[in-house]
Length: 492
Image (cartoon, rainbow, N blue to C red; front, side, top):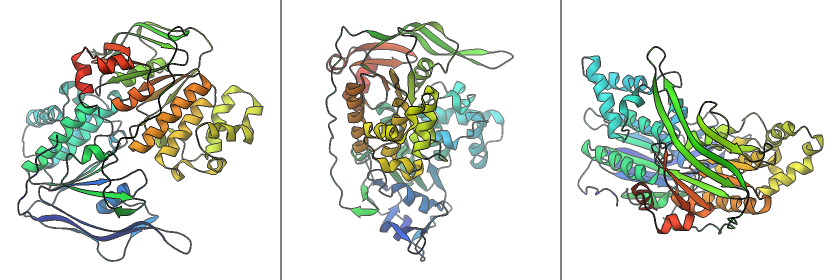
């Protein structure tokens, strides 16, 4: 259930009047966003929704004044910020926290930079306590450890909550949020949106929030702007797309991977080191041709488990056994654009992976076309750069790069999080087809329970680094036993 919004006379904060966005081209400029008008007032919640490529993000960038050099807006003044007393602060919550936090500075010191700008507190201890208080407000229970952690030591969901804290601590008059809950599980989505809108109401701030999740945002906003192909269209009521049903795995199939009593601890500090337990006594099995799903709240250890299986974490206790020493595992990451080299065309991306097999006949164009055909892309994509493709197409390219080396296991770490529902379903259907065609095993990690249920034969539930429940998908869905599982499914 969403937040109760106020209906009263309020002052406008932002007016967007016939905003059009163009891309520079040789002779004719290309219109990307058709004239768009709206107003945001105090206490108002505006949702900017639509599928990938509809124009949401470029609209936000135009408002912030950070459009790329090849894009420009109409010559008039379509964006007006209104003065409301002394408050005219605009805060931005970005989608990808990992790209927006400095990897060389601890998260606490980056939060302190914001506190020092806006706070009148005199002592270091007071400013530190304020940081800890804000970390707890955005749902980070182990705030002291988070404060002293570097971005690479935290999960995507934890990083996103830190950027939310950095934005809200300024008590802005307008909050611009670009997919702020993408990396969060359903429980934390509810918590963070409750926090965001409660705080916004307390300071009478307006909110413009971008999302591809129409169903979620419609519960929290009082105005919805639905974009499609750069045009404002009538709002389409939320609908549920149903993925195709996966082929069930025979219980008698051979075991591919066995993890027994595995624990992972990370060392922090040099002179008086402490240890953080990321995984504790994990037992997990994956069979040939089986898709195993892993769900859990942000920071529960899902990504650490994926890195462990890929061999990216060399030190651990317990045993990880691949029954066939020739087994190859391939990782498919959350953000396809960040995992694809922007300087390589698609054919070069595939060839760079195929070269590891040391078989020249696989480098031919015909083989590359066949690989793309497996993921539903045609030959024309071979000559494209990743940035010329949509988010869904980029993820298909990432999947093509992974399967071209004929792996026995695919590990997907939140690989659908940045896509809209329609593209999520198309990728899930693709994965089900690949599992059937190639008899490939998968470890599917996600906070989206709906998609995990659609693709997985067996599910493990993680909480605080431990498996708290596991079982066949249908059994876990219909008869959950653990409280963590019940809470996750309550938002399903």
